[in-house]
View 1: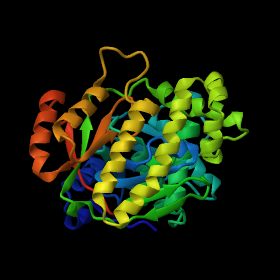
View 2: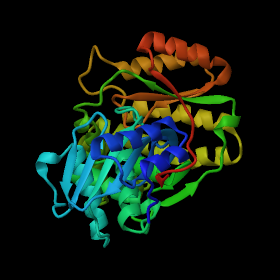
View 3: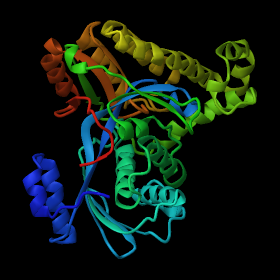
Length: 408
């Protein structure tokens, strides 16, 4: 059962100004005098494995110190009423959780999809009012959508399901809502890192039962800072670019009578290269080459962290970055000429770091952000120069959050 307190009581318990502001926001929108519960879900950063999850591969992710947080109270209206700062007010009837085609690519679709999955598990989904605030950067590769999906999951889990759903199950529900209701064919990395929390190694060979391992490593002691650099490129209208990657790889997989590359031995793939080039095209072949390489790198990265060998970890990250640009080709959208913001951001990282640290395209790519590990003694110069070129506030220094989706 979720903890419930009046706003006045929360104000004696809370110290985070953002959490206090969410309580105030709830009262302004939904009225005072109600008992409120608080829930939080973090954004995530992808540490290793770029576009490997949708091929049932391996990935390494981490929750970060940016979050979506909600003040919530049950209602007797039979409606999920959600006010998200900066978004339209959403009202979803709990008796109509079917797919609405006109809602695809909208928050409404995610609310309906997550609730539908909980209902299918036997959860008696009821009405609630929620005021949501998020500082997870939209279009940043930090997965603001996954944070929202996981937030919805922990709300329903806490209010109506006695927290019976595991963090892994909540992540799978978020992916289901995004794939089926929202209409984006994403893998499971984003939701899993947000839901489970901390530094998480994931193996999606059996996507219904992924192997999830928390990795005990303290990045704060390395002498490096984790930076996410906003390239200035916009994610809008790039769904087709993201969808093209699994679609092209599916052509290769089907040649072998399989659904994903993880089920095809690498040596079989290389043996069939002449046929595959003619069948699927060279871009698809290069993207498959990236998958095999990055999938093999993830356990090496995990082992390097376990061994405390941060230099090897950084070298593997650099390899992943080169592979993403050269083979996966998720830096510059097809047909772009003048606007190549991601390419400029990556080139600037290389110049400023001068062979130290590491950097790579972050998340889905094509737009959004670059990830870099920057030596602390270079951080101020790195950040200043990045923001001189890419704009004020474009370089974000983050930390790893120790927990995933939680009730506060």
